[in-house]
Image 1: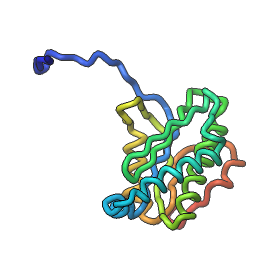
Image 2: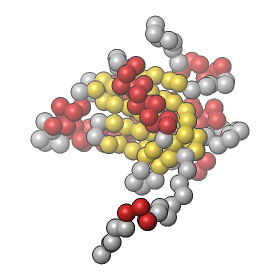
Image 3: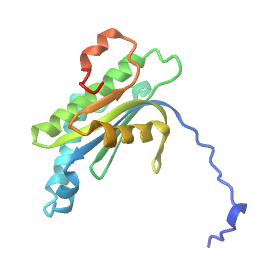
Length: 173
């Protein structure tokens, strides 16, 4: 039995956020598809999209320093890669995330679904239970309030000009 003691109880953890590049993606119209998915077709398509996209991005086997965190909840997909201070693999990690997001987008589009989202850099934490951080809040706000159309917004600093071929500036900046 657990006895609640009001404010006398203190957390035993000491979690902290760290710098990550994250992608928050939303499949448009999926709420209706989920609610009407009597044969679980959309559920199985969603699983297939992710398996295919990850396979095309390197088989889901990333070197330890480039481990990608993936969480799917309802019609949302979250991907994150930690970017350490003075990370020598920074541009490579950004390219991995961009490539994975592009593969997911292409897989979903191939089956007639649309998606929008945002890629941002900032403070983030995850474990088996919690996803948390300012960057996640920012990505969700961008996806909901700015993206508006099927597209992926990018709000990060890309130091290597060769990586700019991934990006196009839209009419709204």
